Image 1 (cartoon, rainbow, N blue to C red):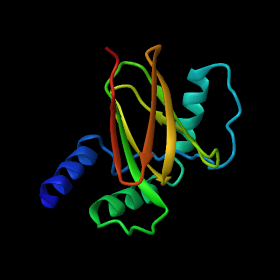
Image 2 (image 1 turned 60 degrees about the vertical axis):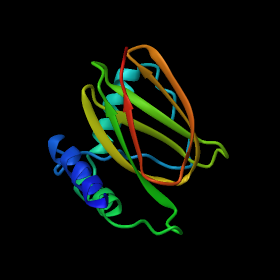
Image 3 (image 1 turned 135 degrees about the vertical axis):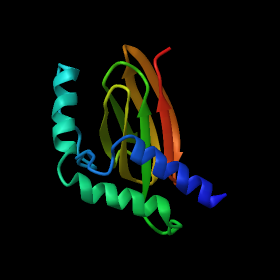
Image 4 (image 1 turned 120 degrees about the horizontal axis):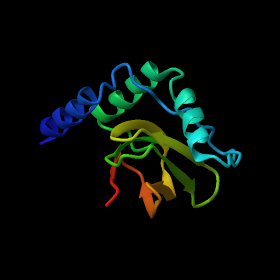
Length: 147
């Protein structure tokens, strides 16, 4: 069963041309400045996402392909956006110590390594509001679509 999961994850990454891909640059624990134009914010986040992307992709793949260490404070997140709109998934730790603004391109996927914990997830998916609360302690695979 583990081999099937690993093969599916590898197919997911290869299918999306992730090997020379992009990784978000986010600053945990620091609030992000409010940018009135979400399109501009998305472009800025995607630009930052390219910094050290190969190294960060390798870290996510290594994490997903190995048995996670329970004491590891981080986990992997893969988010798929099947809508025709670029989105920013905003994760805010319930205790307020971690904030992530993760860019996901339209009809695309992106992957991240985030701190484990309880989060509120928010996003606008083609002007439809997405809101969820999750306890993220294991790899998270999330698919967002506009319907």
